[in-house]
Amino acid sequence: MLIKKLDDLVFEKIENLTDQEIDNLMYEKWFGSLLPQFINLVKSPINKDIDTLNQLSQMYSETISQIDDEINTLEKEFNQLLSELVVK
Image 1 (tube, rainbow, N blue to C red):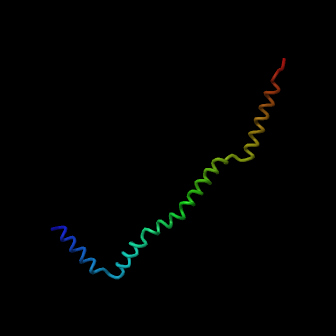
Image 2 (tube, helix red, strand yellow):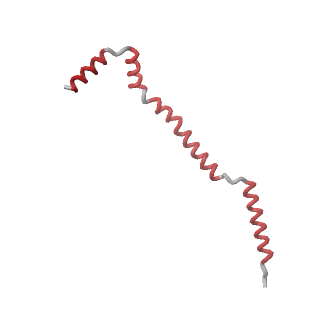
Image 3 (cartoon, rainbow, N blue to C red):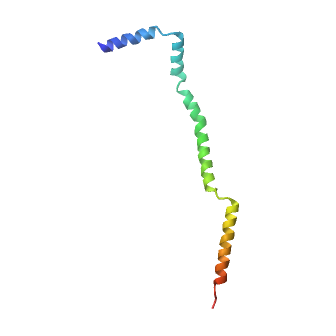
């Protein structure tokens, strides 16, 4: 009984659709899911590139001057230890 009533309401609505409603339904049917797919075609490689850049940024976050400073500090420490070394 309720299913029949619902079917009747659906058919009545279908018969009385405006041109604008029909256009909207057709657009959604044929093109509605394409827009997110097109957006994903562009976003996906960009997001991969951004991830790669973030990894590279983390990997090479230490600058040359920081590395040079560390080398100098370690050389000084090494020279200090070397001077303390006594050969008998």
